[in-house]
Image (cartoon, rainbow, N blue to C red; front, top):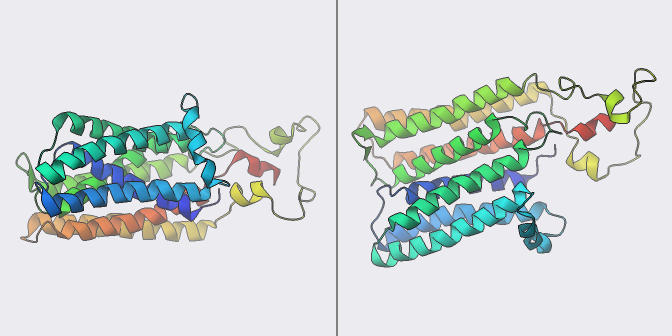
Length: 305
């Protein structure tokens, strides 16, 4: 699949934004009110909204994006839009009381947490539901999306320095476990999809054309003399050598550096603000990971080309 930058930006930043919103909804310690609360709200809402807006750039007619909301009964894309708007409206009410009155409503917080988790899940299901893309059609796909979003949220919330402990456990340890769990899930996902190909699911040029009863189908010449929408959006190839290098880069930026920074905060007197650097590194690694998520995906339509 074509790794469109707008969609990569959308899935990474909105995931981080809604992950932070989920932490805010849980009532984790953050600035009580005023400028500090405003900055926290600006970061959380800004990441979520920026990601959602960027997703419209991939549409042929962005001005018609509003029409997607009407298909919520059958479309995960529509459900994601409805859930995102609902969650952001709840957050607007929550943020108003927090910033101006120092009040963090528990009832609104629960709705904010549930809405944030549901929105990220809906985003993942846009891809996980597609049986035409074997690597996406995997149970671990939404789990990875959710864990990366929550890991991002934990790092952001902890970086303000107000959230020192969860019970008697250091927030640095919680962040360490969250980031580690997300990448363990991703490693399991990579291993799971390695052999889950179109061929393994019984799809081939023979079945795609319906001519297998005649004999082995092979490509004589391309069906088009130039690119079309399908070849541009759904047929993309990345060499195994380059894919392996990019995986190492994503692991270095998104896993090793953030885990090392969390460990430094945990075992030394380094301030929790260092977790902000871990968050930035995690996001950089996720941009590479998400590029591979799209670039390595093989759609069934590629069997024709």
